Length: 225
Figure 1 (cartoon, one colour):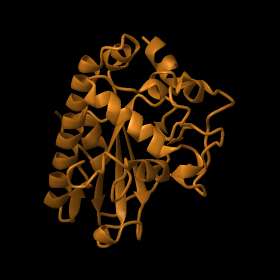
Figure 2: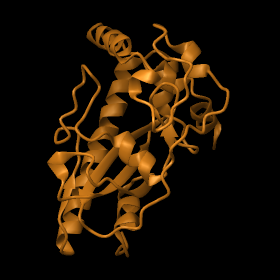
Figure 3: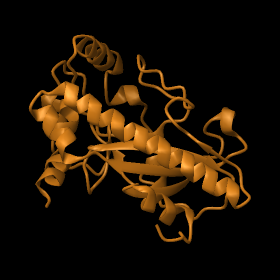
């Protein structure tokens, strides 16, 4: 690995698919001394999405968690890199971000940092969507006091009139309302209905990520060579 010139290049060399920077000052009182956010996007391998279509959820979860492990490693190495050049940093791993899997909430949502970084937007399904990979991505982040050049925040959905995810939802949890950053999550999805179904499926050894696999941009990603 060549010596990186900056943190973005370093994270890409480690395996990140996209990296962006955002002003997150004041969004979480727990991290008030770290006002700058680094969003890390990791595309999911095509085999991961194909396992959903085959309803092979054991394979899907194995692949997905391996990507989360990779994201954690990238974020922790990024934290170390920043500290080594004299700034403070905190890798926002899933454990550190205290993700509540029942409510699907965290202290500082990765999607918030990612949209403010300009890397993508929130789809009808409340999943993060990128133009390159659709919603077939996993997200991580690093908070820091290192000066960064912020991206242009995306504040409105860039989905067109496609309703694939809404029609694919087995419990009708997705509302017709398109996302913008003035709305709450409850405006676009019934998260209680969604999370209850997901948890029941998970306990049964199955799963539900149809909104991810049916996303039009995810399908376009799968077709790419």
